Length: 297
Image 1 (tube, rainbow, N blue to C red):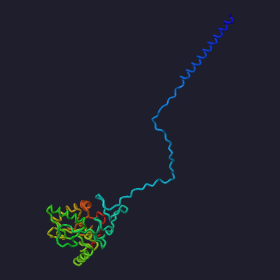
Image 2: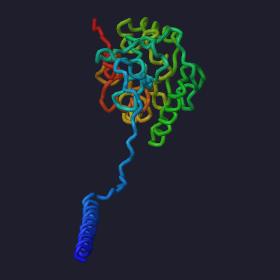
Image 3: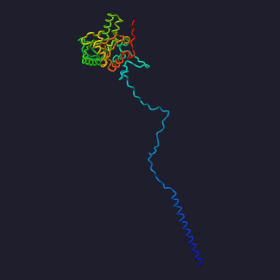
Image 4: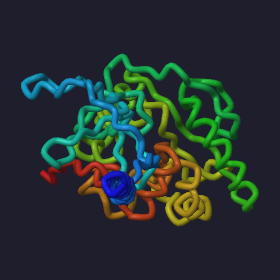
């Protein structure tokens, strides 16, 4: 009986120890699970990284050619008061005036004792302006280039509205006509005197078709010194530039232009340039920095 009791008691102890061991294993496993953090998936707002498959540039390769736009051709006449005509070029910062033969058709061409027109030059757009002249015949000296003729018509009409009545005296002249006229003046007054008021053949602005001598409608003092001081001359001096004309040979500028004062001789050069020159009180030679060397001998 005693042996049986001991046996049962031993079994009970063994069972208790087994249960305790089992419970201990479960508790350790639970603690381990609590110590390890759970795996969390986090979504990012950053864009995905894309591998750059473009090869690095070849440092020795020439850069790609980019064609630059060609500069605008300079037609010679600018939209500001300091512009020069197409027969003027820049050379090391200095103004260089090319002979009128380089651009005889330019409305701003410089024609004087130094710079001549081609002997056979005749404008292709000569017309008869619809204004009064001191003669009735439709001959060459009644003609002007179209642009100058249109401006002359506007100017004469404006003068009429101010009570000033003008008339044309002499417009276009060919090379041959100027030659005959100059030779006649030389015979009359001698070479040096003739050169003060008449141009040698090829050097006359009248051959451009852009110059005209004017007077009052009665023709009194036409192309004569007595035209100075008349109401017609005063109106022209004040308003001619508004229509693109300048008094080509102004007072006290003979040493620059080579010609004595001629208040009747108008030259068309365009409104902008005419206003600029007139407002500065200069000549076309001064504008181009090309004064005429005049001998007093």
